[in-house]
Image: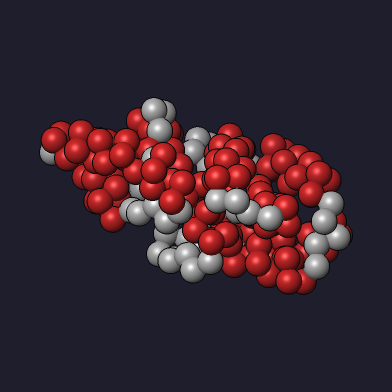
Length: 191
C-alpha cells in the first residue's frame, strides 16, 4: 500500500474542495481523527497493515463532504473504491476501509476492532480538554446547514448524545471516558 501518496492525494483534495463553512467537518477534523487513530492503533497493538488500514480510513472518512453534506459516508466509500487501487491497495483492504468508514454513520455499531478504533477516533474530542471549543464549531456548522436550534436546545442535544455515546476500545475507555462523563454532568446541570 502506498499510504504516503494516498494521504497526500486526499489531503490535497480536502484542502482544495471542502466548503469553508464546514467549521467542524473541515480538514482540521480529518487530521484530528487521523492523529487519534494513530494513537489508539498504537495502544491497541495493531499490526503494521492494520495501522495503515485504520489510518487510511481516518483520512478518507469524511471525504464524502466534498460532494454533499448529508449521507456523505457512502460517497467516501465510493471514492476509496475508485482511488485506493491506484495506490496499490488490494480489494480486501479497500473493502475493510469502506466498512470502517461506514461505521462513522451516527446509527452504525462497530463490529471489528478496526471499526471500534475508527468510532473512538472520530469522537475522541468528547473526552478531551477541547470538547467545548470543538462542540461550538459543530453548533456553528449545523446552523449553516439548516439545523437551527437555541443554545438551550443544543445543550439538550449534547446531553442526549453524551448519554448515548460509548467508547469501544480499552484505550479510549481509559483515556477519554472519565472526562466525557464530567462534561455530561456539566451540561446536564445547565438544563
